Length: 179
Image (tube, rainbow, N blue to C red; front, side, top):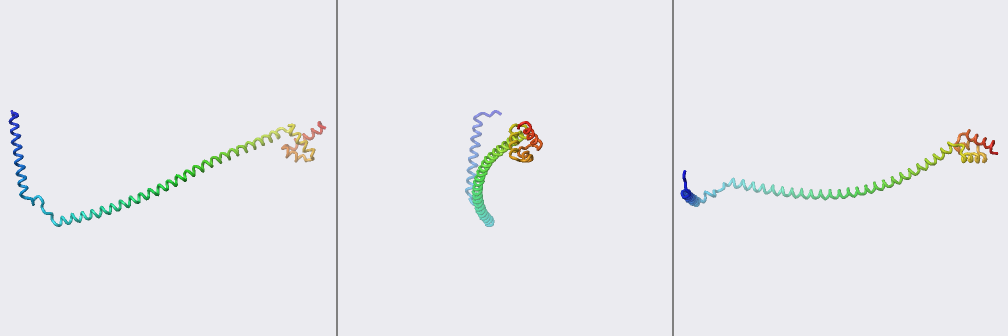
């Protein structure tokens, strides 16, 4: 198959000339029959298409109105939610402030309770120390002072937080060794 460049070029020119001729023939033929290109649309098909277009228009209008209503409703709901959110933020801020106040008061009350408990403990400790040591000079002095005032042994025992026998012993020892 030994085709040279000249032969191929000649073949290409012939094919292009043939294509140009076919194109002119097709254009000439289509020019002769214009009604073949635009055939008449049947009346029932035209009516169906028009009804379809009219119904589509109504549906589109309804859809657009519904879409607008939905947009308005959504905007209204967003505004209401924003208002509620602002109210909740205010409530949260007030609650946080109340919690801080309650914590402050609780710390103060807790401090007062601790102070009172310490005072009670110290008083109780002092009373226990007095009760635990009836021979302490201050206990003896109190018992003797109350006895000189004329209180009974039972009354002195209650005031000094001692047993009756301890009070009697202190008074007897004082009479024996003190006077």
